[in-house]
Length: 254
Image (tube, rainbow, N blue to C red; front, side, top):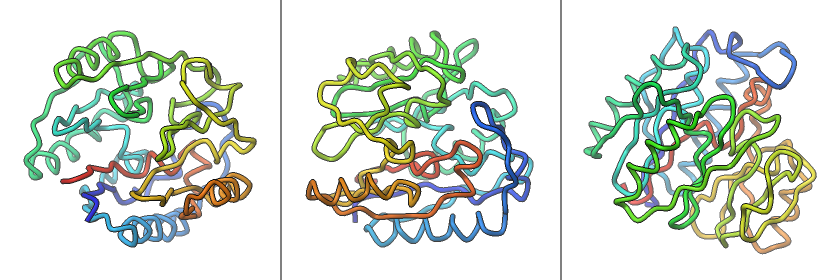
């Protein structure tokens, strides 16, 4: 078993979720639930124990569970989302994290931090500074992670919601990114991608890499590089600027 993955069922109000950098289009909630179930099945098939956070019906964006907690080593940092309407989502996640026995810390006001802005690569933690995560949130996270031997690198974002909407890391330590959305020079070894859906992937252990069905060229590239793409259709969540990273929190070894 690789570890535990946290997911959260879509709210029936999913279609009311926030959109920032794209136009609003109609979301099929029933189809989204089917896609979410297939996403959970893909995690389980890759040897992750799937634990569901209780649904939050009054929180349209609550399915994007990654934004509510950052787990580094054995420490779970409960976030303070940049969108005020999303802050009630944190309580339900805190309950499950506590049940798993992880030590917890919190980002406090006036800091804001979304988990989607936090990309861990070895002992370096990249944090996007954009519309959802502010300087005080980055400072607080830096102070919390320094005792764990982690170095926090702030990354200014362009027209993108979260850092991990623009760049993620492959198992070999290289980064997939869209150069027009983040400063590529901040990353030590990177590969540009042509598809927006191709710059957000989730390493699942070994050579398996979770990737959205909207990025077939990138999936083919990964296969050519010796990885095994695990392709999931998340089209309904992409209408809300969601990606494969934000639908789960992986806790390796837990």
